[in-house]
Image (cartoon, rainbow, N blue to C red; front, side, top):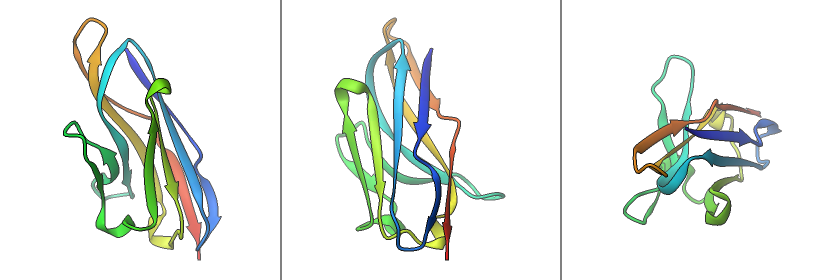
Length: 120
């Protein structure tokens, strides 16, 4: 019912920047929370940055001061600006959104993932 399409991943040198985008589409009435997680092989998926249902923006300690989450509510899209990238930022990044559909059912959806590789 709700699809998330991610873009913007790729290969970048350490110290460089990338911007990830995630657009939600489908039968959306409201989005209560939306953001980005990342996962390395064999590890748990972890929060990178997200707008919460409480109205706050949460960042992982490891990205504070380097990554900035923004959104365009009219387009149901969030952006993750990643600056000063480090090799340890290399991961698959997943977009997540939760909210309510037009039939007032709750949804929680994940994107397909986009690879970010930072070369040292």
